[in-house]
Image (cartoon, protein in one colour):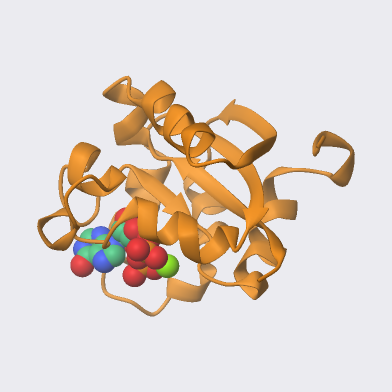
Length: 140
Ligand code: IDP
Ligand code: MG
């Protein structure tokens, strides 16, 4: 076990549905510490850079359109084993396969518009956190 940081996004569908507060409350209730928080709107090009690992996947263009379709809320959460625990709290990519009580089961619309993003590894977090935050903006 080690203290990790995860980059979490409340995606455009979550902002539209006004469930950002519920997503934040869930991570607070689970004991994570909020280090950074901002609301912004990505361009399609920026969304493409963020999701560059998926550039060859069939859903890449749709994903970049969606992620740039409206404002998002970017957060950095810290805690023991944060990366795996946050992925578990989020639930499966497809809300139809997500476990009861997970954020995607509760708030996602479909496999694309699935409410939240969370880093899937330390390596991903090391790319994703500086994408949105400078070290000065991360306050423990
Ligand atoms: P993850 O967000 O659970 O890690 P990934 O497979 O890494 O899931 O996919 C990244 C994002 O791309 C998903 O969260 C979802 O928004 C979108 N996505 C994944 N698969 C599909 C699909 O089959 N159709 C449309 N969008 C998809
Ligand atoms: Mg992923």
